[in-house]
Every structure is written in C-alpha cells, then in structure tokens.
Image (tube, rainbow, N blue to C red):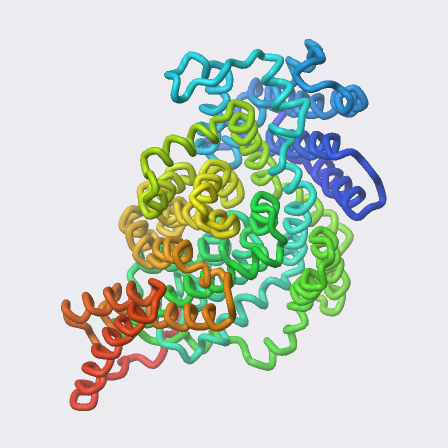
Length: 639
C-alpha cells in the first residue's frame, strides 16, 4: 500500500486542485460568474482544507516514505469530507438561504457535516499555523458546548448541537463569517498578486533597490533588511514567513558586517514584523480592519502611515547608532548592483504603482489587486528572465492556492472564535469584567488590553491575531470613548508585536534559526529594537494626531515632536547619540523621548530641552576629541 500511495502522489493530486481553486476565485471575483456569499465561502474553505490535507502531513517524519499508509488514506478521506461540506451547502443552497434561524430543524446530515467542518478547521489550522490558534479556537468551541456549567460571570444560556451547527455551518456568523468572506473576496487577490510578483522574479527589485539606497551607509546590511522587509512584508501576512524570505539574504550579510548573530536575527525579526503595520496592505489586515472598524480602506491606511514610519525610523536609528558605536563597516561593493541596472528595472514597480493609483481613485480593492496582477503578467514578457512559460503560469496558479492555505485555515478558525463570542455574549462579559476592574482609568484599561493582545496573539499570523484581539478588545476601548479607528489600531499593534515578545516570539525564533543565535536572547533584543511599537499605541490613544486625526497643525506638531522623541529613545536604548553616552545622558534622553510623545506644549519644550542639552554637550566634546572613523571602509563577502 505504501508503494501505491505516497505523499508525493497526494501532492500531484493537489496540483490540479490548486489550479482549479485559483481559477474558480478568478472567475467569480472578476465578475464572470455570480454566486451567493454563503456558497462562495463554503467552496473557498473546502478547497483550502482539501489542499491542506493533501499537502501537509499530520506529523513530521524523518523521511517522507516513512509516513504510514493509514495516515495517507486518512488524509484522502479528510480531503473528501472537506469537499462534501461545501457540496451539501451548494446542493441545498435555497433551503440554507431561506431557513429561519434557530427555528427550522437542522437535518442530521448537516449536524454531522457541521461538526466535521469545525474539527477539520481546527486540524487544518494546526497543520498550517501551529497549535496556538487551534488551542484558542478549541477552547472557545468547548465553551460553546458546555459554558452553561461555568460560574455565573462566564456562563451562557446553553447551546444544543443544532444551535452550534446553525451558528458554525449554516449561517454566516461562524466559520463562513466576516474573516472568510474578506479572505475570499480580498485577501486571495493579494496573495495571487504576491505569487505572480515573486514567480516572475520582479520582486528582486526590492532587494536591489534596498542595497543601492544603503550602499554608503555605515552598517548597511542591517538597513537593507529594513527596506527589503518593509517592501516585501506589507504584502505578506506572516512575520515569520517574511523573516525566512528576506532574512536568508540579509542576516548573513549583517553577521559578515560585524553585527552579533543575535542582533542580526533580531533586526530581521523586527523589520519583518514592521511590514505587517506598513500601508498600503499591512499584511493583508488593512481590509479586515476597514470592515471591522466600519471605516474606509483609505482612512485605515492614512491612520497607519505615521506610526509605521515612526516604527521604522526607530529601528533605523538604533541600527545606525549600533553601527557607529561598534565602528562597523559598509556594504561590500560586489553586493551593490549598478545604478543603471536598477534604473532599467524600475518599471518592475509599475504594478504596485497601478495598485496604489487605482485604490486612491476609489476602485474596488479586489479589482485593483487583479488589475495589478494582470499588469505583472503583461510586463513580465518585456524581459526573458521575468517571462512566464505556460508551465510557469500554471505553477503560479498552483502556488497561489498553496500560499493561501494558512489564510484559509486561520480565517475559518477565527470565525469559530468570533461566532462563539457573538452567540454567547462572551464579548460583552469580557468588556464588563475589564471595565469593572479598570473603572474609569483609561491607562489601566490600555495596559490590560495590551497584555490581552500579547496572550491572544502569541504564535498567530497577522490577520487572525488581529481578529481575535479586536473582537474582544476594541469594543471595550470604544465604550471608554476612544474613536473606533484608534481603538482598532491599538489592539492591532499589540496583537502583531506578540511575534517579537518573549516567550512566544515566533518571528524572533525564525531570525535566531537563520542567524544560529540563542533564541531567547534574540527575542529580548527584538523586544528592545521594537520598543516604539510598545509605546506608540498608548501614545496615539492620548494623542490621536499621530493617526492623522485632527487639524493639520496639530498633526504636524505631533509628528515633528514624535520624530525627535524617537531619536532620543533610540539613542537611550543604544547608548549613542553623537558619541558614547554616559548613564546620566541615557536617562535624560529616555525621559526626553517619552516626554515628546505626550501631547502638550510644555512637555514638548521639556523633551526638546533634554535632547538639546545632551546633543550640545556631546557636540562640544566631539570638537575637542573627534570620534574615529571605522577601520574598515567595507567588508568583502566570504569566499
């Protein structure tokens, strides 16, 4: 049986299934066909789950041929069961659409398929995204089953199996809810955009442009990481995935330049995490936030611009101060592409430019992404190295489906959490509990939600981490009078930076693996380098101008003082401004940086005075004793 059936044969079966999934999405999202949202969601989830069971084994084996035939047969059956879940919905679509919620009886076969879909979703999520989200969603599902037996503060009124199936399978509140609807209508189009960009090799412009821009900057490889990860990370939905994509190039370069291994891994982890907060795509979460916050997509991007810029400014400043402090060298000349070569490839950025222009003109997000993908396909024929062959085109369609699997599973799993919260009223209970603990103290509320974000976001990809935390946390802040967009941006930040917050800091662990550095040391260095992401969300609740909320002059003042404050915080963290700082100078810079974030003219003047005093003192010392230049002008790559 082992010779007859193997994982490689299941992968061959998955290839046409993946192509069919992508073509199905294109046919209906472009507008050639019309299908109800429930049927679209069901087919989308079933396609994704079927591919997961065909491609991802239940456990790791030393050798692929060691996988037992029984597990392979089981995976085939699970893939068929996932397909049956969508097939039943499509065959009974009229009954599903017209039924009276929680009144009409649920057919026995629907009970079986509904419960099967929940279990398939949990297992599919475990195989693609690991245990954390599966455990959280499983705990919520168990709460749905037996929550009436818990203490009164947490108990709900009880749910029958029919109620659970109704919520999770037959209605658009559970697995087929908002996360999956956004995934099939918007996120899949951007996954396809990224797949075509990468498969055409046009994404190489990001790395080449980053190397060219940082060629004369001390400690340049670390700065390459910032630019490359910001550009690539914004269109990707997983910080750890970004680390492996760009880190395999940047981390060895940083180590060669003289950065410690743990620092190199941390830089890439933080830079890749920052890609998730960088407009216009924000790791595919911008569209989800627009939906949940009931705001326009452009208003979400506008609000995210300044915090993302401050995040990368802080990382850039700390890297620069570390390079100056350690007298590190520059990027090796052999690694810097000729400017003429990069300029000839600038048209590779035209799909991204088209995407932004169409978005700014108010076109549908899905239409914009599909148009940008078509643009990639057309201009790929301009050069031999980017041109798609027939096989390459179909490989890209299959790769698009494979790249979507984590999003499909995680969004479906997030739907379980959201469905339970909405059906049982758990969200209101959570709000009441933390509101009663925090009272009218907004700061205490922010700290409690920050810790909640760290816990619920641990080990989870960007989109589901945000959904879970936002469903519970954002309403609590809105109840306290915080504007919806500010509340959602706050919980979004703390859900995302859990990837660089020990003990479960998956992006830092990925960077440590590439750098061959101690994981926990890399994690704490990541936390230090990402310090701004821990501070800014609290500050923009008190100073919404940091999210471009308010009049123009207020926004300008908040932006300028925040930039100065970032420099002060970065210098305090690294112990270098114009030269090495004393302990007293670091404390003054830290106080000045934090003061500049807090709104108010007096605090701004006090912060500027602290920064100015340290800068003036170090400038005068430098006049008498200049800082020596780095010994090595550049570092050659290893043989």
